[in-house]
Image (cartoon, rainbow, N blue to C red; front, side, top):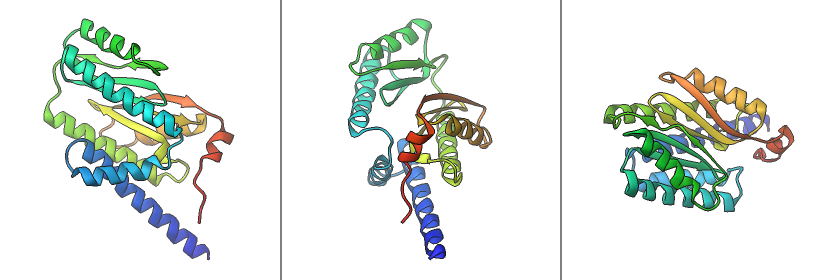
Length: 209
């Protein structure tokens, strides 16, 4: 019986690793849409956010990205987790940086904004590909850490800096930052977490079969 449980755990972890890598690489255009959709669907079912919050996060990202693109052009990435918005990428000047934040602030349901936009040129394709690879490695490292629930942590990488978002306990936050900092290619780790208690985190842990 113990061997069966152990084998199930290893199989489940392997499947989740594949799902995470598919989602990460698919976001950078390296995989077909079908693979990306399946991976995202698998992880969404294990999300600590409510279904309503997940839906609102998607709406925030889509609306913000479209309006920012219309106003100041491309180069800005918008990530929303539990209505907490992270802005990453490059803009031409400080005015554009402020404009992007103002656009997000006017959207409904936004609770807070973490503006990490850099005033510089558009990143090269090689830099973007390297960032996508780092994101995939960090997510895989989280899946290999038995004391973390990888599906509860969103990873965003910009020019080697890794941003971590999610609903986590203080212990999980410290552990996630430690794991991410040891991944090859990571230059800096910035946590943008929202904290919950250990009891709340335990209640969201998937049950073994």
